[in-house]
Image (tube, rainbow, N blue to C red):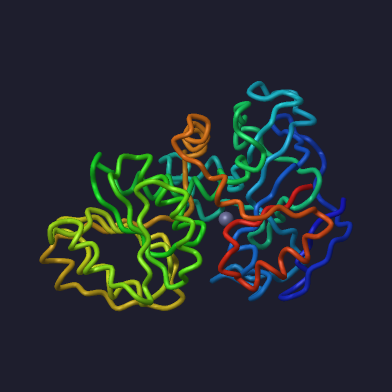
Length: 343
Ligand SMILES: [Zn+2]
């Protein structure tokens, strides 16, 4: 089957590759419609690895997908041929302790699309376990369906933050993940969400959303802005979604007493922590690694129009042009938020 294959660092090809095609009794076969390009796909392309995950053999990219069911296994009862679906790309070992405890995203044996050695979904047809495939309501498009995967990270972060209605949040980093966190925080009851970035063009996305307030880190100091808007109290929640060491310079003075810090961005290096402030403010720290049990609610939020991800989809390209799309994504152009590939 034809697929977008990362042969090795910086080398992509659109070629035939052997992929599993047998539909097991609890599997479904999906004709892929839309696949979003994620920062991690691009990172494997440009660096050949992410932390301990190293591309050693050719790997199909893509993990943010939606499509249509074209075949179901004999024991599948939740889905039928013709259903429009999105796919949760991480499948845990159902005998793992993490799975039994409901924290299956932390299962070290979990397989995840386009994470070595597992192939992704940038190919016309995939076979997948049916219990990780979710039906899309009629009013949610394939393009939006392919946004559920990043949106699930936003929901995981919002759940960790235990948002109380009316709280104020600050998101560090206005990339796709920072944005889905901000939108989920607003949908989850935050009265205002500030979002900070060093790239001014990225912050333009805020114009599409009410109560999402940009902070231009090249010209503005988030500590001053947050204090001004909160009568010197500070933000109730800070979501770190940039992975940048520099972001931590602003966090501890922007957060309110007994505030919550949710870390989503994965920094490349160890970061010094201001423990004196952490302790004297009793700051609660939570971390996020992917997500668990978020897909059904992410779909409901799109279907009920509580969250609109459409402005974030800045371009859609044909499958035949996927190599060009990756070359462009690797340039990290400030006007690109989410590029999707249509199969
Ligand atoms: Zn992703």
